[in-house]
Length: 358
Image 1 (spheres, helix red, strand yellow):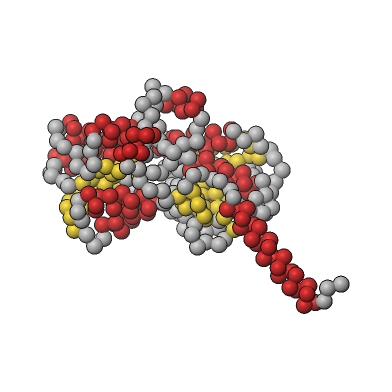
Image 2: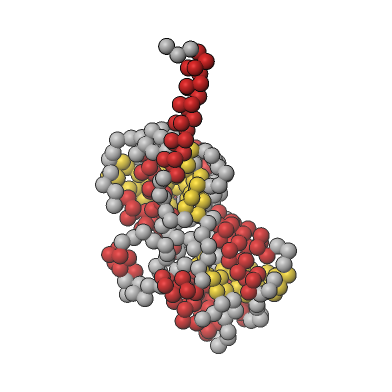
């Protein structure tokens, strides 16, 4: 028999070993290339906490499937990831269609359906909070991505680095313009967490420089709205030193406006989108493609599977990749796919050609 002191020492060593084991297992989970545990955050969901025998039914509350081409592909990535795992018997995707009220109702519906896990992409920083807390209180793990929440009651959070997005693209303009000049700013969907974060990153990048925002409006991450906004800016005053765009479709639209009027496109920020890459490669303008892959939808499905499979997993993950230069754009551009295709993607080549083949 061990004495009390020895028993206590043994228990402490065993507890430390278990904690280390949990941490190591969590770190081994591959959610998506570039997605890593948030530095400095030690919160881990213990192994076995949400373990459940398969088959599993997973639900998703999507902020707006048809908001733009990126949102549509993110939904497709999620569905494909679920379909590829035989342990998932049903994947229920509900579309909030950019309505906070609809998102509240959708999460309630998923709880009522007794799904085994819920994935949420918030419409606004508060639209999903009550539903998230209600689901967690009901014992349903909740994975959040593509947007912020005010609550921290979620099970796992995968943040796509909106501030990093804005900062990377903003720093590109600072460098290109030598720290001074006038820029136009095209923002995304008003009140959407990702738009708020991207803009915040831009402001951080230009702080302390002589770069001034002389025109700003919301292009809704849409080609059509982006075209209207950029054309309005151009007709008011075509002299601008650079363009910061929160989304590739708006970037393409701005490039088309300048070409439409026979003018040179100034340095511009874009995204890793096939249509933008093509225009960038063809035109040779000074640009950067900031990465924000729709595969984040698949990453959330993988996180849900890890939880239900009884694996330890970190509570908070970040996705903050570097921007792409023209060489990387040329190496990854897909001439056989349409301008609606976004990268990185985990869709099979068969799925990609079915969705985006020319």
